[in-house]
Length: 408
Image (cartoon, rainbow, N blue to C red; front, top):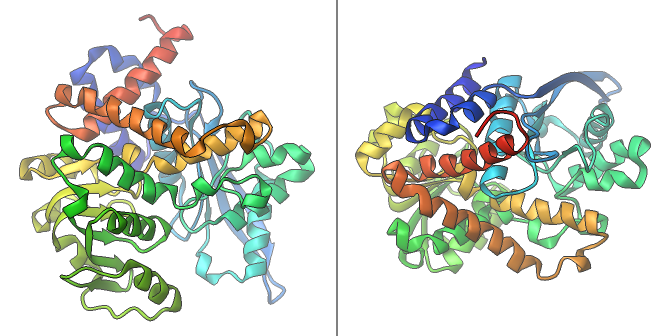
């Protein structure tokens, strides 16, 4: 088993200690059902051909077709793709969605691409994986460094194989292709919604919270703006170039404009945001940020894990010992997949107008997941991560038993 996936799966050992009946389903989740690795090529603007590696992992199909984003990343590798698909499997189970988990990636630095090269790349990904990307089999979505426009081009790559059905194999599309407005910024907004929903149980009042945010991408900025709208004070934000801070609170709209224009005035290093004395530290940048050896540097009451796997498994015990609450990724970044499900459902039903109140459906899905985790946290000694895993695994176990994979 690969290193990152092995560490992620190891967290399930603790859940089996809590509920021994989950041993079989945890064993079932140790490896992905399918990892596809292929090479694609594009024609560069200088006329040369570039080749790059691409992946699609379909981790588990117990609950239905697999669902997961596609990222463009210079550091992408099969180990990372497997781990992310594993986490998506658990996330979909926690939200009781009719999906298994998946993930896709292309190993490329997106900053090196021209607009035309990027268009070619997304189309090529759709063409390369047209045998798996179908509305009833495997559904793609935006992820790190990908956009609705990239999803539009993946659809174009799928069209020769699937014709009009290709739009159902991709979510997070532009509105004129069947995308839903609720999908835009749904990951960041979902985290704020959950903080408001679970505020009493967490002992955190977002309307008066002081917050630091690592990451100024789409999720981090949306989280910061929604949190500020809810009354919170965002005192620090960071990206790979540094940290900006203001003890009296940042103007998030201004920050977003300066970020887009490349005119941010950094006043500290990137890592300094992790040391901010705040109620909530939001991790919305990258994986494996908080490790056992830097937990002592933290001065927050709670971590909201928007980035997938932002906290390593070896940091869990240290965070618990320090009394820092963890809002786990499979719950707190679930707003995106909850919205993607509605987009997929609209395709299946024949249009957005067939769904009813989309905002209410999205909120109900997240509220139900929050309630599920809240109802099991007492079994897990107060650990919200373990409670989320416990509920997700019980859901998957019930499906596996119902399918006769092993005895109840």
